[in-house]
Length: 239
Image 1 (cartoon, rainbow, N blue to C red):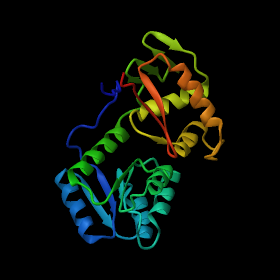
Image 2 (image 1 turned 180 degrees about the horizontal axis):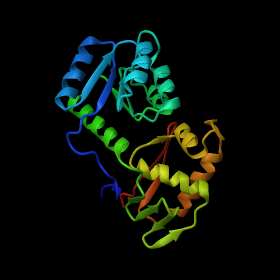
Image 3 (image 1 turned 120 degrees about the vertical axis):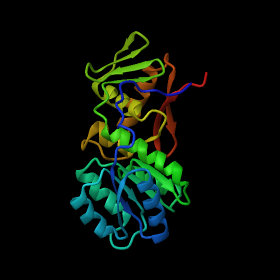
């Protein structure tokens, strides 16, 4: 059984995007340029983190492919600086493959994380997916299995039965359903649902809301999974 979301508008196939590649390895940078341009995109490449921030402000790209270990400004700081003011999709592409590095990258606001060595065609598929999600209008209705969420009406249903949700529970469910099948880090959930009210990763507020939400979804086909040390994921039950 596959996850599905309704009413998602996708970009027209073949539409050109402006992509900023921040990569200090010339060989990898040229490979990325080749595949991205072959896929119909305009590419600007920089090799320095400090320069990347200046070029970003000048070019305002549609997507950023970002290495972490950069001369000048570190990639983490580049990501943090961009995410502070912009929602531009960021795909981290790095040799740092430790779980802690991946979690930190996602916590900083990266939308995807790919480790080197990578398969160019898989990376292109991830780029297309990020561009589609970024370019579409806000999704008004989300569907995962028998769970349906009406964002405008702020109501959720299991089949035809409404679920009684508190405001924060509803907001949390929307974020998890929007990223169905993918782990959403704790810090990212706190930022998206509680904004600046709670930024402490150790806050138990999130756990309380997750437990309540899990109980209210008990009769549905979806499962709210805990991923130890990372965050939470909404997925379909295998049974």
